Image (tube, rainbow, N blue to C red; front, side):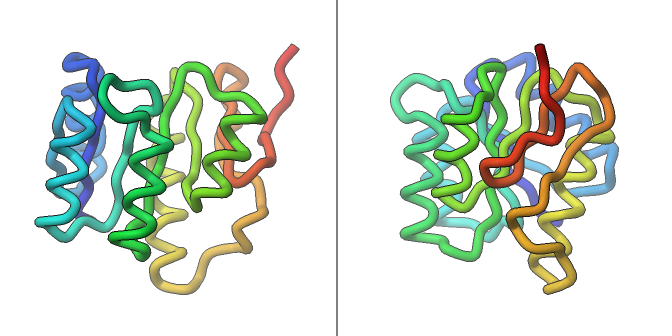
Length: 149
């Protein structure tokens, strides 16, 4: 798949790009949400992996714009501040949500879900997705895979 990563943290953006590339995907990355949005309008991507908290445009705002302009584009939002409210926002916008930190297996599972959704073999969107790793809450829609105390 062709994947665009958008995260204002240069180090984490590079790390994600390396992770996605190691999973066998074609990857581009940008550290500016508005530049990422413009790239999405000019280029064909299968998935965008986007941080939620960025200067100039929030990831949730970016998803809303992409849903209008590129409705078939899959988006995975990532946040160190994932909670029920953000999960609901992501679900409303049609995006998946991963909670930082996450490992390559969690990201790979989310990318596989995107590929399955594109091919029509995915489970219903309300099914929880994610990791068995207790340090990572992974969200699909408004459902948490695990509860954290």
